[in-house]
Length: 199
Image 1 (tube, rainbow, N blue to C red):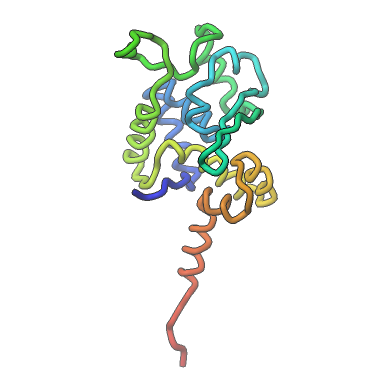
Image 2: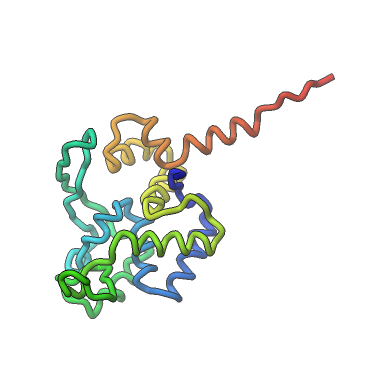
């Protein structure tokens, strides 16, 4: 299985946003929150309407995995991007504060509960379906977080320290590989390589 990649092309991101805004406002908000916040999908799915209503910043507690054995809860804070703020407030207008931001339309089979957050698999199917529609490969739910990191870095490489902190990485190489910059650099170096003999 290939490692998922960020969505590198800004025009494609805009086209996806336009498409989702028309086809599913919930999915549009999910996609936008993912590419504008850098949150893990598991954290996005646990957000409730009250946490974002009339807020500039969202405070949340994220799970940080250390050495893949111990999990430590870490408090984080992120700004709601101005580009999506108005749509987000419109989206939650009729929600109760305790409603999950991205509720499933189906009743849970085992408990009968309603308005529970969509399952990660549902989110994956939505993102991979949209990716296929736009001719993208190696795209999954983790691509949203990587897309955020990729474009934050491309906008200003000085943001690398911020990205390392947000992702919980301890070295630069891990972060650059994670957001796809290492692959881009390798591809570019190979393109420049020439074994053509001159003269």
